[in-house]
Length: 255
Ligand code: NDP
Image (cartoon, rainbow, N blue to C red; front, top):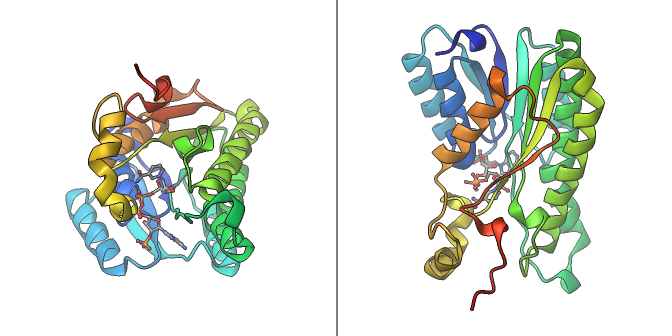
């Protein structure tokens, strides 16, 4: 536990499993009070909360059921964030995908994905930004995707939603910087979570094209977010930080 985290509360969306769980575990180990959300993983969320609360009895670990596809639920949760005493930040991680060819997009499904990946982020980050600016300290982090900057066939709407997150976070960062609050965009490549399960049969082929030849583990993304929350990361803002095993560093075409 670090002294800097004592008494500070951070919110993590989608914290019961996958990357969100990696973030929750890392920030709990840092000493923050953690409030994380889940939608369908209620049992996992309760297990995570109980385990972390037992490991860190001096901190408060709690969880809330929030469907980020539901504007009413997001609004209510935004109100809770804004009123939290000792608020220190938000890691917006909840997300989903919608795979289709760019020429065959179904607008209803695309809009639903934008609500989850983008609009809910803007609502919660906006709610967090005001109290953080008043406190003149805090962190806002979006878990984006490499697809915001590099095209992947079948990912147009997912990529567009992640690109919208990137543009929003950069602008937010500029607007809140003068009050000492940072906002950053973490850009993972491939991470070993359930989100990748539908692509299991391609995994080996994909890994061969990643310079580090493997997917990331959720704990590695958690460690990066932990650093961005730390006091010494206070000069990093408006940044796009890749965690992709070198994928975005070079052309995939090799001779
Ligand atoms: P998972 O599928 O393992 O987890 C998705 C998370 O999002 C769960 O916590 C889930 O909650 C939550 N979630 C999904 N839909 C909703 C909803 N409607 N309302 C609220 N919460 C919801 O995926 P990852 O952990 O891999 O993904 C986390 C983030 O990382 C996403 O934003 C994803 O785009 C991004 N990412 C992932 C990559 C990867 O390779 N895995 C690569 C790049 C980015 P619950 O289980 O409770 O329903």
